[in-house]
Amino acid sequence: MALHAKDFREELYVEHLEEAAYLYETRCHWLIDADVSWLDLEENDTRIEAHLDALIIGQHLALKVCLDCLPDADANTLHVIVRLYCRHKLIDRLSRLWQDFDFEDDEKIKAVGDALKWECPQDWFKSLLTTFSTTNTPLCTVLAPNLVYQVPVASNAILSVLPHANENHQLQFLQCLAYSDKKHSAQIIRAVAPYVKNKALAGAAALCLMVMGEGRTLGQCGQWISSSPLVFAVGGDKNQSLQLIDIAQRGLADADNLLALGLAGHVSALPILISYLSHPDLAEDAAQALQLLTGASIYDKDYIEEEVEEEDLFPHELDAYKKGELPKNIDGKPFGVETQKLSTDKGKWQQWLTENKHKFNVDNRYRFGELFSCRSLLAGLLDATMPFRLRELHYIELSIRYVIPVTFFADDLIHNQKQKLNAIHQWVVQSESMHTPGRWLFAGNVL
Image (tube, rainbow, N blue to C red):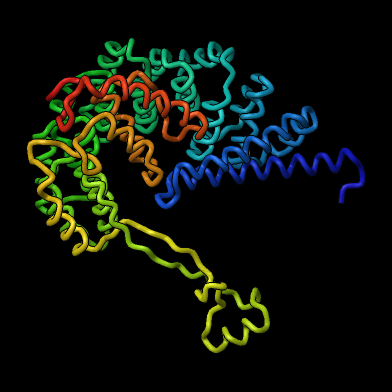
C-alpha cells in the first residue's frame, strides 16, 4: 500500500500504462477477429485515449514510470510509451529506443509502427526520412508505415531502401508503397515492376502497380493466379474471373480462391461456391464468398452456453448442477450468449439461388446482390460485419477500379476512419453517375 502521495500517484500511472497496453492488445486481436465488428473498436480507442490523457497529465512522474518499465516492456507497453513520446515530442527518447530494440520481433515492429502512425509529430518527419538514406532497413520497416500514413510523398525514401532489404522487409515496403502519392507513380512503377517475377512478392507488387495505374500488371504475373487469387479478383477482368472459377471447379480452391470468387462477382461461381459448403475446412469461406456476391444474408443462430465452474455457483445452483442441471437465467435458458454466423447449410443457399437466379446476368458483375459499382465498394467498407482483411481489399479495389483520391486505412483509429468514410461517401455521390454499374473496370475504364 502506498504511504506517500508520490508513491500513490506512481501506482496510478503504472495502472494507466498497464490498462492502455491491455486495451491496445485487445484492439489488435479484435481487428482480425471475424466475429468482432470494426465499430466495436471505437469504445476501445476511447478508453485508450482516456488512459493516455491521464499519463500526459502525470508529466515527469508518469514518464518516469514509463522509463522504469521500458527495459522489460512487451510490444503493447512499447506502443503506449511511444505514443507518449510523440505527444511530449521527445524525439531524443525515441532515438534511444532503437539501441536495444528487437527488430526481429514482428509484434514490437507493428506496435511501435502503429504508435508512430497515429501520433508522430509532423516536425519529426524530416529527421525520420534521413533514416532511409542509411542501410538500416530494419528500422525503416518500423518507420515506413508511419511516413506513408502521414506523408505520402515519402515513396522516394522507401524506394531507396527497397533493393537492399531482405524479402520479408521488401514485402512490407511494397505494401506501404500501395498507399503512396500517385504523383510519383512513374518512379514507383519502374522500381516495383521487377518484383512481380518473384512468387513471394508478386501479389503485393501487383497490387501496388495497379493502384498506381499500371494496367499491364496482371498480364505480367498471370502465372501466379492460383497463388494470388485475391489480387486478380480486385484488379482483374472477366476472363480472369473465369480462370478463378476454373481453379475452384477442378477442386483446387483454398480459402483465398473462394473469397476471390465472391469478390470477382461472376454469377457462374454461385453453384461452385455452394458445393464448397460441404467442405469441412472451407465451408465458412464459401459462405463469406456467397455473401459477398449475393448479399443474401442467410444466417444461422446459435446459443453458446457459458462454461460453469463449481466454485462460482451458489449453494442452490450447486445442488442442481450435481444433478446435471446448468444454472439458468430469468428467461429459463442456461447462461450464455446468442450468436449468428453466415449459414453453411447447402439447402438454404440452394433454395435462395433457385428463387433469385433470374436477378443475375452472366454478362454483369455483382457485389452484395447488386450490380458492381463504387457504391457497393463503399457498402463493403461500411458493413459492420465485414472482416478487416476484406474491408482492406474493398478500399484497394476502389483505388484500382476508380482511382479514388481519398486515402483510407482499415486498421486506423475509428474516429479517423469515420472521417475518411464520410469523404469517400461524398466522392461516391459525385462520381457514381460517371460509370456504368456491373462492369469490370480499371482506372475508371471498362476492361
